[in-house]
Figure 1 (cartoon, one colour):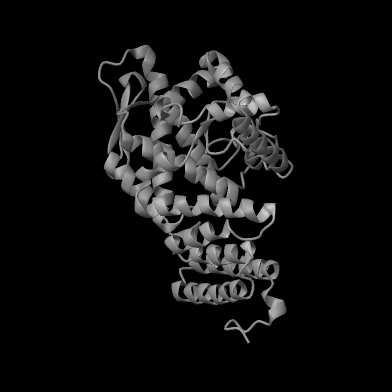
Figure 2 (tube, rainbow, N blue to C red):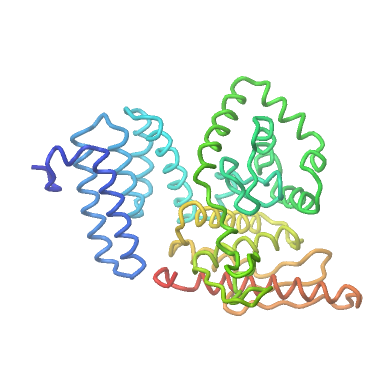
Length: 382
């Protein structure tokens, strides 16, 4: 009998995969309840089952994926990375291979966060949505802000070029700002069509684009446009503010879940950085903005709120970055103490500019304060 107590039939990789899903969900619930000892015991049982499964099926990529998933949940990122690397050499269907790559991305991200978020811009790509100009993490998913997705290979090729491996983050913010104002991506970036066509002409690049395009088509069938969840049930008005208690139009009560409010806050924060941020343009702010994009993407894709480590990192980065200026130097926001974020307008601002500046500054400050307050909460309250 195996250490886990399961029979050989019960150790089939597909069966164990379903069992691991339950264990990990239970461990996540225990973590939110801050029952650390019970969570660790649950993960130990899950690892025993996954390990016995792999011992019985050493040639199965799915079996090794099960082990890696438990290791990642337990915070054993180095072990998880080794298991996943070995999984590429074993037998597995296309779905399993895809899931291994997906888990590798999650593990690499978790390792970066646990070590230093400054590594995120170097390891992970962010893009500009070709339709609305917002910063996004994947072009294989419809934009979570506007719902747009590439519908042709050329559009996918264009989208793939608008990333931080080709442009700096600051260039992407400007590109997105111009697109939000109504300009097309090909007008903002004159050589975009030429570069995209060149990629399509290269056999390997075209193959990669085709794979991403096919993946995007499959994902669209199960896509959930999160804006729909923030629509008033009474009048159908979209309410973008994360702190809204009632509809801005009909004043009806809004029932928005805490994770949805956080998602709205991250989106609004990034909108402000894209539309109003000016200086300092530093590697540290690059990392902070990139980190917020990945947190937004993670919450949207997995419905998982930030981990304890991620929350600490957000607050730590805010206090270290301390302060920044808004466009044209109209104002400054101070984050030295995330528990009490403050701001002030520049002296000598013309009277005609003050109303708009006051509105933008107040909203940006309040949004950052909402973010800081959320990150100060324990995971059990979210």
